[in-house]
Length: 498
Image (cartoon, rainbow, N blue to C red; front, side):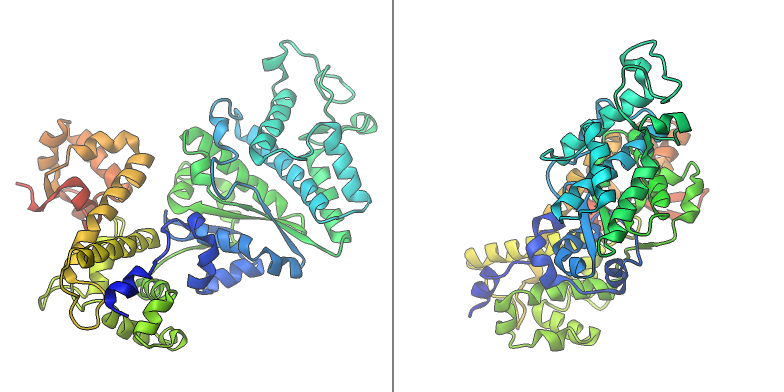
């Protein structure tokens, strides 16, 4: 095969895990973090955007049959793709954390009941749970997750905010429920009189579900939640109320030995919801944070390359032998790619060049941008072949020039689809930097943004928090350096502003 033919048969995969679920098992290495998650030792997975949280989530769902053999049932509490089930809450969200806590618990109960039906879990406790939910119209049935969220929220609002709906509503002293409200599930402990009237607390129903699972072959259920950054992206207040409540419910569920949750959350969002104080945070101990270093990122590149049979056959190598050690992976990388992109004794190796160009100002290397760079690199090299450019030197599949040609697309997508999409309030300040120098000081930023010094410092610090700036210098004389990742998209000029 020619290099052109090899590359034509090559695919480095999608940068978003939801778009390549079927192929993930071929790329994936079973790290200690994965083994701890799969064994049930880990409940909460933190990581930067693009770090691979959704890949772990997708793999967990893909291996549900293996978990079933271990008596673990998985429930997807959020849609893996498409519009998130909780996205529409922005229009009329729960007003408080307490309402969100009630929403989460009742939502989980509805999912548990649906799972009992799906897996044929039948005993007196399961029947009681389904009957209680059915009486109040809370059985999932054929509803989508989105519809179920709305149904549960409507119930919560009618119970906790009756005056907002009916005005001047009286409460039945026996049942503690608003008169005219037919529901029998409440969120506190009912009085004896209320219990005799058939009123149940949501916590007693969770205990009922737990008992049903314990009796039915001792099954455990994991309710798995991902894409929470998308679900509540429209409102910071909504996000804070929702996620604080979720973690309080997570801690409450630790009392039930058969019911658990697996939560995948971005580190910056966790920081945001806890920075104002969150006492419960210290009790969340079954967690792990995804981190990527040079060796693990090299492994990612090599695995995605060797997933292509054409590459393995062209280089006549055994994938198992290559993956057996970091040195073997380094050696194969040097066959696959040139030793340097920019030639010179002080210039980085190609791998370090790639990592440096996909690293943000917080010094985070996310697999998403590296995978995107690989895919863009393939596209640019294919274009070079099609234009009749000479083959890359030696064994390399890629010419040095293709690396530089691949970077602008990665830079543009990162700027527009991540930074602008998530921080639209900073867009004007970032756009004002277009065409400027890559290294700035407060004195040089003042005329660019036309702000007073304190306001300028505040904006610069915000840009540092989101990774557009890498802070350098000192507190009294700060300098702000734009990482390579954003330079092409903003047409920045190398050097320090005067």
